[in-house]
Image (cartoon, rainbow, N blue to C red; front, side, top):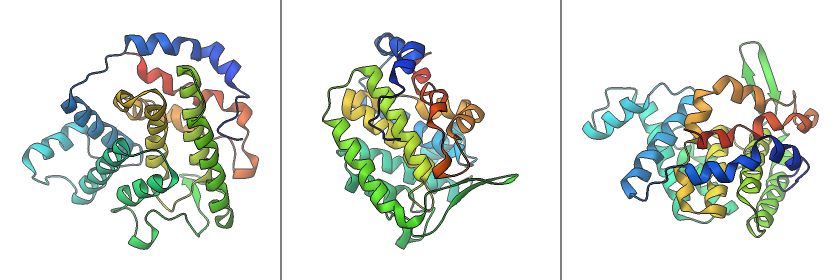
Length: 254
């Protein structure tokens, strides 16, 4: 499945895409810089929570006020790194080089230095209580797959897209990156960031304010169920991907 593929767009448009323009028109985008700063921190907190970080938004913001680490220093640092990664993306173009720099920033607490901002050279899987849930692409194929992935993103960035097409392809980018699993750690965090980065590149910087990560956190079980399309990279059934693609636009609804 390529992220530029429109195979499922007709079904997407019929079920949810046609509503996106109206939802955008009704969404409260604030022009205040302090609002973006707060929402960026909220995005980082919720995205980290999905990965098991226990610091809630209230605790993190109180830490920001007091600078007293009354919670786990490591968990606070994970969120601070992710905030910095979002801010880097907000100021830079969406390219593979900048994408790797974003990973280098967000993974400072997650990985040793030699693994940050570098595609993995090891096999990885996703494990749950019952054992192995998903086996990712073999390490030797990650670099060429990511080169093709960014070639497709570049084509999309140069293509005229409607709002619904933009959301559709952004979700496909998120889904495909999660399935490639190109890093030793930080894949979920950077997939959610990349989804929003693509939308902001296509529709404008104000779309960094989308509460996508909060929506995914509040619907975490549905999010994980929808992202699971097969037991390994070669048995993924993208004919079932609409359940995942339809999640993102719902963050526009209040």
